[in-house]
Length: 386
Length: 151
Image 1 (cartoon, rainbow over the protein chains, first blue to last red):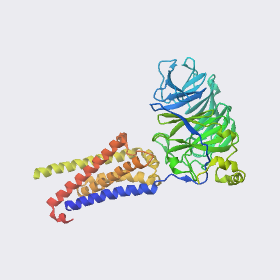
Image 2: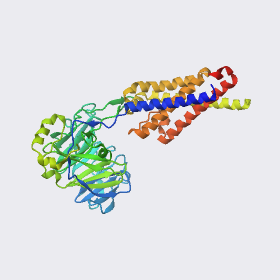
Image 3: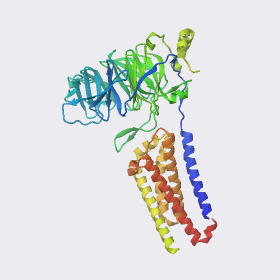
Image 4: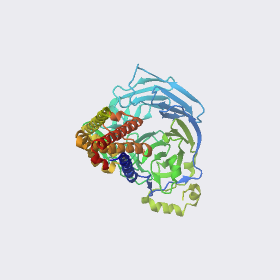
């Protein structure tokens, strides 16, 4: 081979190889799929961003909010809390103390429910509680159970999600910190579809006003509402039609581990609950929603948990390249963390005065038609993307 | 000229040795945790439909290429194959990093510990090495065996 020919063939190899991989990518790459089966409703008078504050560091999560104060924990400094008011004007640091020299911090979570606050780690596990007037936390449970998700229900009760010893699957439960024998698990609340671990994953929240546990599945269109004794109150549906978790789970025998064996279809990223309402950050693009908006914001769907119905949706804008990570609703204030920023959106009384507005799934077509007949007022209120 | 080609020969042997080491190591560490490797491959959206075939194919190919590089007759073929495979790996990483949301690594062993940029540099270095090897062999053939010059 002459040198020239050699270079040509090397170049051909490069082009061929890159071309092959590019084609493979092009044919398997799934564009953002639009779910044609449901359509969101947006208000003309959509909730607006009221405040924004740069927290300057990352790693924040919302530890609680009450009486006009937002408490932010940080995974990198577990013993510090940042307190900001709901107008995001004043920021202060709280360093709380613990009743021992050191604690392992594997996955520590701080929760503030004035007048108490908790430091918990379900992977170690430990539960510390203190008062918000002196910020000193004491260990309150001798032998706490392991858990992988936790919310404080009141000063002596926690809601947890844990792996049941009996079934080796996820179960929701309550823990009484006064008495470790009073750990109750419910095997009925989480409904297994694939493996009982990955498919039932979701967000656990506690609704203080209604004294109810709310659990939104990540991979299917359902949410569970249960009372504080773990009795099912409502099995609600989110607006999409993904009723079966689309995940594939593989087992690594050598490590005795289970892992997702294929990219999963995530339905609901995260949720929060306040009053009668549930706020869900959905991952699915609905019919006729503008892609431009979708790409630079996160959508929040609002549901009425009492009436089991969809109310409306609104967008929470990205900041830079960061999307909404986590959020909390305090009365009529939506608090969101986006990258290093904290934002608030004013919800006002939008959902309280309005007539029900149904823009749900295919299976409720009749409902949509009914509404179309008698909803001139709604049409005015509702901004549809035609 | 003779000393020169001696160096070239040594360099060629060294390149082949590096490749054999890399591929045998990568393949064995994949086979060692094969079920995990298969799951990792499945997690990459672009490989999901062919996960089990790809999971078998990649380490097998790596072993095969290592064998080719050990046999003098097939050295050029082996280097071409290695060159192609490495370009494909590089293109794959580049595409996943820039155009896809997931970043699963399935390289096996300590190579997994590399960061993505290091990984790209590492791969590109190996691509260049293979190219150098191919050029050396070709130079040899042109020199010693004029019959092949027309090829």
